[in-house]
Image (tube, rainbow, N blue to C red; front, side):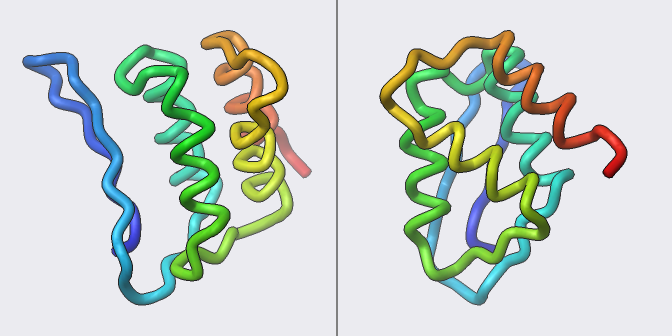
Length: 98
């Protein structure tokens, strides 16, 4: 798989590994895992832009729908500071009925 996000409960440390590989479909559930880790502090907020940019620029990912694409585009925007509250708000938009 192209991306692995993990949190180690004992140490409270999270990491994301993005590798080359076969195309992977990024669904709302995948984006929610990333946003939850940012909202809960398992991944540092300053990593959000880097992670989103790497996923967007990689040829290894297809985005499941427009909401996933928009969430990652929002994360990749370095022009405004990103907060834990915004991560929660993005999670809400991802899970809202269409």
